[in-house]
Amino acid sequence: SAVISQKPSRDICQRGTSLTIQCQVDSQVTMMFWYRQQPGQSLTLIATANQGSEATYESGFVIDKFPISRPNLTFSTLTVSNMSPEDSSIYLCSVGDRENTEAFFGQGTRLTVV
Amino acid sequence: AQSVTQLDSHVSVSEGTPVLLRCNYSSSYSPSLFWYVQHPNKGLQLLLKYTSAATLVKGINGFEAEFKKSETSFHLTKPSAHMSDAAEYFCVVSALSSNTGKLIFGQGTTLQVKP
Image (cartoon, rainbow over all chains, first blue to last red; front, side, top):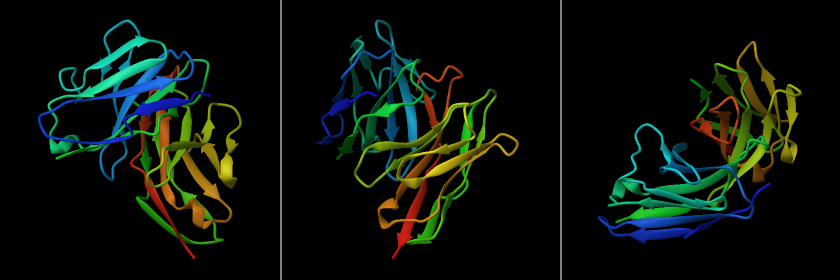
């Protein structure tokens, strides 16, 4: 298993600003993912954070809005840029590994944009 | 493409009665399937997983699910509901045949347990 720490756990931000969310894993993992959970909705994959290369974004998500860093095998950041109220969501970091058969999730970052 | 459909957005049961949460999937390969639970203001917790071994999968807290390929279903059941089971449940399918953790979530089913 993997233990994932996300920071911050919650934040209230002004529209037009940016927030960077950190994800720290207690072991080296190959795959890291960022998901969004809008209020009352299910989880949607934003992107796969690749170590040493650019993130792979899902349809509807772009790097300018959600830049991602993955400097090593235990850490990643997601930035929500130029925020609007529509960005109010829970953002979750997840890890999976080819040797494992499940994904592990951080506690999430609850973002409110006012 | 892989997808998953949870057939009920909301299920209400009385404490002590059986629970059935329905899930159908679509996959172009033999999928890995999961059920996750999310309690209010809590993180996601894995209940159980199917990864091409036994078709009847037992999970935590008395939950189990049966993989039925002919029906493309993976319904979640529990013989007797507890009040603490009230939560949001997600049926999930792996997005890739290699199952590296990239997941596709169903829309979720809210389970209400009445005293």
